[in-house]
Length: 490
Image (cartoon, rainbow, N blue to C red; front, top):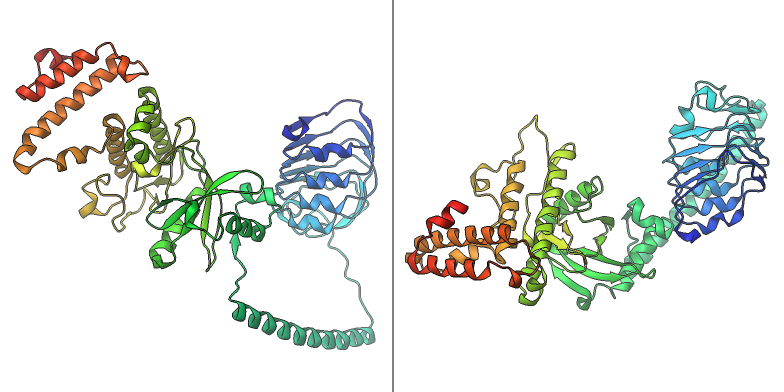
């Protein structure tokens, strides 16, 4: 089960010998501590394949030799401690790519040469660098690296040689660029410009182009047979990757213009900053002229609206599951409004944008209309949302606030309880019957709520008071009234 291991702490033991190279068989390892042991030999280069590693502590051992270049491939590494060893040589140049690194300690070794030009080394305290052979670089606690002076005639010769080489290089560079551009225009090929999300693309070794190509091939260039839904600014495709993972890919419509670009920017900007169990997870996205798409986790049961409009699937959605759907949606809204800073307003909450996984857990999706709200300034914008779910006052105030989502949440809650949108029952009636029918609609809803609260059974057809409630509903419809006995119960 090494492949599932995420944390390994063997510190403060008496382990000796070389560090095991088969640690590379733990690809999900995020924390590795071998501190205060008697390990000897060199640091194995195989540790560089642990792409999820965040904390690495090899301090207080008897390690020797040089640091392997492969350690620089640990793009997610945050803390790095090799203090109190006998490691020599210079710190590999590949370390300059470790932008996630926040804390380092290389003290009490035999290291020399310049420090990598990244924040973790530049701002490291003297205690993390002391007692080495000769470290230098852009750190206020160290001496600057020496600049070797050349004789004047050597400088002239080198300058001439460099000038000639630069001229030749520029010539070939211009020819190469023109050749590549000509080939692209002839074949209508554009290299994808991929903006990566670390959580998703790390599984493919940060190769965004490879991921892009795999998605295009898996959907057969976005063939309609893989399409599982069409939204306001994109079509959604069910995609199975080579790893066996199934994802949902939303391909942006080409003819959407500025509106689609703004929705794309809004969704990527917000979903890359927030994370909640009841909010759809964004794995990554690609922005390219030919294909622009977003990659999400796949929801097996689709949208809440689709389930409620299917009699068979709606029957399977038991009362307990419906309550859990409403609870999950409420948790997502509460997180956006009260735990995000600044708070996030979705502006388009509807049953179509609530997706359910295999356990009927609700996940709020489609953040193309979402906005962050600054409480210290005005938040005016154009109308957004779905008619029937958007708060009526938005039609004339155009002010974004949390109340917009609360109103939409209430409509979705009614829809979950009743099985259809409340407006569908009203709009389907003749005009001269609507006033009377609206009163009956309110009474029927109150009876349904009473029924649910009084009979918590999971199976609607096994509720003990079913006949009683059904009889009362029929009496209300025939007499346009409700008994005082029920009135008091509500």
